[in-house]
Image (cartoon, rainbow, N blue to C red; front, side, top):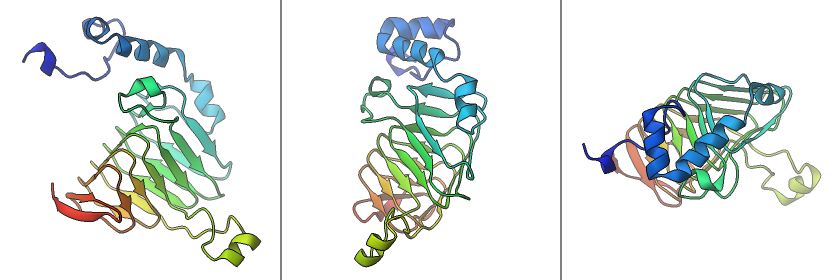
Length: 217
């Protein structure tokens, strides 16, 4: 294997030979790793109602908006990229994870990665293991506001909601939008820029607006 084909993921330790090699070849990665080690102390997570898991990596601080009567559970080896320099796609803002109502619940499995973008939950968002969310994608289980104009004026936050479920090993491309009530089957790929409004079968590639199955994967 030549030098250009080696894995360029984050090194396990800042003091390792791999860390030194990456600092030589890709100095911006060294800057990202140093900043990661200087932020997100355990107390920062606890103040936001989360228990920091093993192997978490955060490049720039995410925005955590947790209703005090809601729940956010995250597995091991979380990786969030919230700074523009942390990914060549240039996230336009930090990762935002938000539960907005009492009883809302976000559950995320192990090895979850997200760059910029949002998880917005009024009811339930369930995400399995090894799910990667591309730059600036948005997943929401709510319409945010009623569709009927009179109801919107009377009760602006009384939106329709429905749970979102994303199974294991799903990849969501950059700038995708996944809306309420959707289930995405295991091993599927959501192409960049998709608007997903209906269920996605397992091991499927979907693309377009609204997203449609293109082929299996």
